[in-house]
Amino acid sequence: MNMEFLGLSASKIVRLFCISMLVCQVTIGQIKVTDNIESWKFNRQVEKSVEVRHIVDSICNAYSTITFFVRNNEILDSVEYSRDLPQFLKSAFSHALPLYKNANWKTILPKSQTIRDYEIIQPFVYDFYAKQCNDTVSESQMKDMLSVDIKRGNNKISKFLLIPVDIKIYYSGY
Image (cartoon, rainbow, N blue to C red; front, side):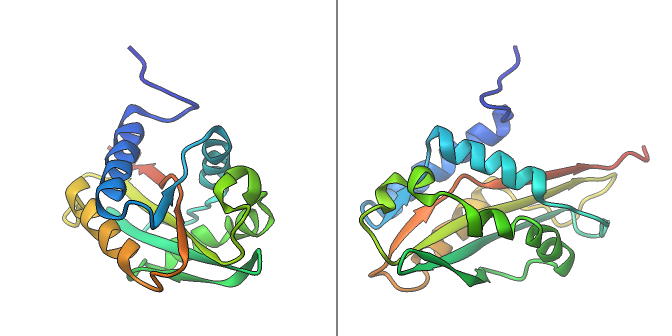
């Protein structure tokens, strides 16, 4: 049986569900989890626009959250990565930045309509399926890192959690 919803694999749906449950348990009321058709469509656009032009085969997994700052209903040019994301992944993700700048946040984040200042938290997961991987990041480690990332920063500003951008690359030299 093929478990897909809007082009998402079963593992991605499970990952999103686990992250959503964690967020609800940790920070009820302070963070708003975004899960609607518009956010799923936006997520697909972002994943298609991320261009991994070269692969560093010593890096099999990477995880970070990328925070976008919205002030006076305008998304700022600066973004913040929660941990050391390798430069080749920052470069790959930079192709998606115009999508965030030009997105219709009122449809993606309907609860943001009455808020002028907020933060958008974008989980970013990179998986390179190679012959050998020594740096794997487990689901529980990702949930722990996300929990820490959500608690960072100004707790007086509303935060919106987007669906994780999940980039998978498969090694074809087997």
